[in-house]
Length: 199
Ligand SMILES: Nc1nc2c(ncn2[C@@H]2O[C@H](COP(=O)(O)OP(=O)(O)OP(=O)(O)O)[C@@H](O)[C@H]2O)c(=O)[nH]1
Ligand SMILES: [Mg+2]
Image (tube, rainbow, N blue to C red):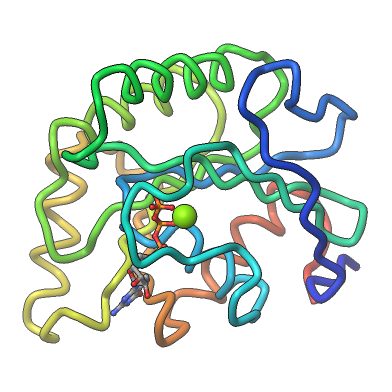
């Protein structure tokens, strides 16, 4: 059994030499700036401000590694698609993420975050292609569900699936980092891919 309360910040990686390669499974979170990657990690751990949640979008510019109970990593990728970021910064981001995806054996499970309210952007679709091409299991997490009316939920989830061209066998998890909706589903996926229970 893995104890989620035993969580520690390990490092902020700015280049590929900084990625841990100790063989521990890595569960990665990717998505647009401000979509709620850090908030989802906090919700998984049921901690208030463990992974830093920013008011200013585009704050997380490095890859943040958190080790859970000495058994696996939660990996918080920097967000993309923030308009106010310079071209040079975007290029740096792309190189950093590309080097993470290109490194074989890092990713155990991908969690691709999108905003449940909106149609996925062109950048989201590019990210989706990276996940598909990585050949590793991944799930889509439709965050900020609390901001939807009940009647909007099903059509929005379908639009996400259609726009990202997600196969039927890939799960799209309705999620709210704010309320905790979808936490059992996401924990179930993580646990299944770790082959161990989470407590
Ligand atoms: N209503 C609502 N707000 C949320 C939810 N998840 C995150 N937020 C808010 O969205 C904002 C961005 O959240 P972050 O977790 O910092 O987003 P991020 O994806 O880590 O952003 P970057 O690190 O800049 O890429 C914060 O103000 C959060 O409080 C959610 O499920 N519901
Ligand atoms: Mg963040």
